[in-house]
Length: 250
Image (cartoon, rainbow, N blue to C red; front, side, top):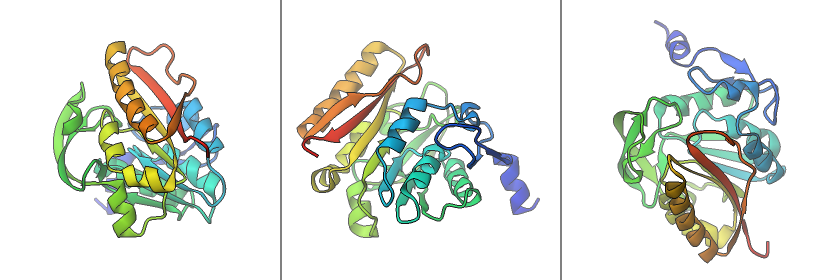
């Protein structure tokens, strides 16, 4: 089997996104939520990312999944901007890179690793759901399917030692590891004051509220004001919320 054939057997052919902020772009999306290709996936998140990026900006996608939001950001920031995708699941990271290539974006740079509080190595707990993998420090996903040792990088270290451009906007969707990610970017928040869009989710209302309070305490202490986004999953059994954090006085 050729390399191309092996890739297609895992990811399938790229599909053209039908509508939304990524309309007309190509996404490798086999086994993913069909709403990605329809262009209806998390519309409030799509709109918030597009509204908070301008040409020349820099977008960090932490927990990039298959790269849907990377494509939206790359379109918005244009050729003078930059998109950095952090995605520890190898096949997802490969899908981000392939979708970027097929959509004609050379501004998307993919790191096949997790973001965390400190740089090093860690255990990633895989899930049957394509976007459900989580670091062991965040707890096991309900549909856990295996585990994988992965590289972890603190965002502060990535900027300091890899020459990454500092972010204008950071998106965090890391299945319970939000505090770790934010803990690894305290200097970034202090010096560069990016906007942050993050997801909080849990099986119960109580669990979601507990996670949300911890994140809110950290960000408000760092000088950020929080604004909940409209619900993307109004009737879902799994509780999901998205929040935009903006530096006070910016």
